[in-house]
Image 1: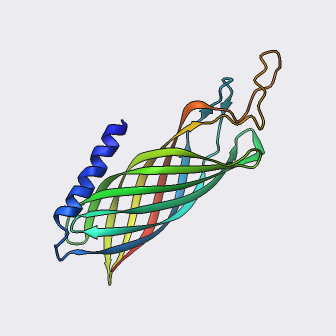
Image 2: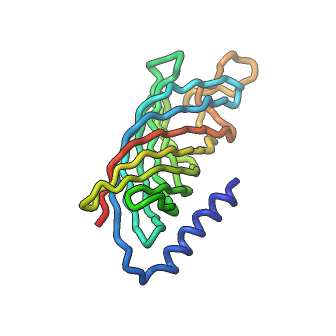
Image 3: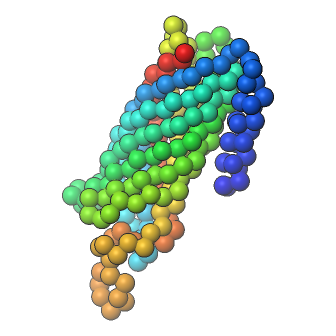
Length: 201
């Protein structure tokens, strides 16, 4: 799966280099918000953590070269345990992204891309940590005029959650501690449904 992400990213970078001298170049800045759907996590002691679905917001900055774009993506969302609203978890994604635009007509286009970077996860009951994150995304872009574009998109984010924190864990097999925040390589999948506004210059 990781090889697929690398391949798509490489295609985007290669396309950008190929058209570096083209007239249709510039930059784009996007702001967006939407709804995130979180997948359950399983701790090293087989305790299932159900994270509530929640809202998110963010910003991205891209370099545009013909029908290819590449840049940085940041989003923030706060969630909580479904069975314990006091236990909150913040997530901040910082990802490099690359996408190829596919025109539908003069004002409408679709796009598909890949992303790779880090997800900083900050629980309110343990120390913050950074984890490897990657994913895919696709969307629809509508050219409003005067450099403005409205868009909707879907992103799949996959974070490999692996840590050795003992902040709220007890590895003694003779105890009943459920070790609520100790992971051994589980994957947190999150789907982000977003709507936003993009300005190109």
